[in-house]
Length: 188
Image (cartoon, rainbow, N blue to C red; front, side):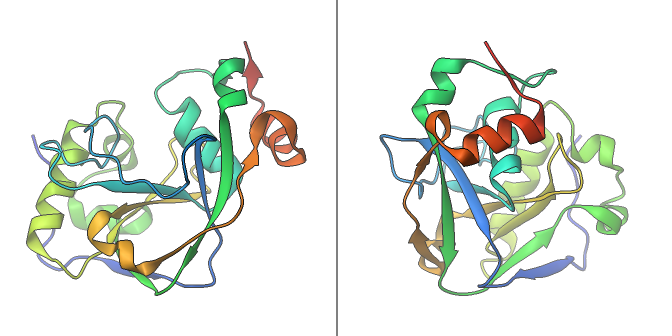
């Protein structure tokens, strides 16, 4: 059963000054809109790309490297291949608020919004993308740390992304060490 969009969409803004973070393979840049339909808000048909961001390096790591697991364990080779970059906005983003009290408008609870299977969220994302071209993406809570916000930014909003700062390698940096400690991630 698909998650229905409410008649009146709960829209919030992501301010230009807000810190946004992306974890990515070091050999690639931070700005990349995936179309593989293997993440939570990807288009199931692969017709549009989605850029995933978090409000801290820690939540970006959790959502990127731990997302499908039931434990905070990361392969150390994967850890060494990854960097974290700060992403900067050129313009404010208008996003669907798919978290907190807004979930009542969808008629669902957090357990369904955070479901391990992505099909319902992907269908909802595709419906939203088709329904309102002025919406830049989706704001949601991390499954691993519900106190932290994340964003799935539609590729059509790429002009609102100014760029990314220099990547910081997770495997050889203070940021990486802090994330391991804060998130209690075990490298194997």
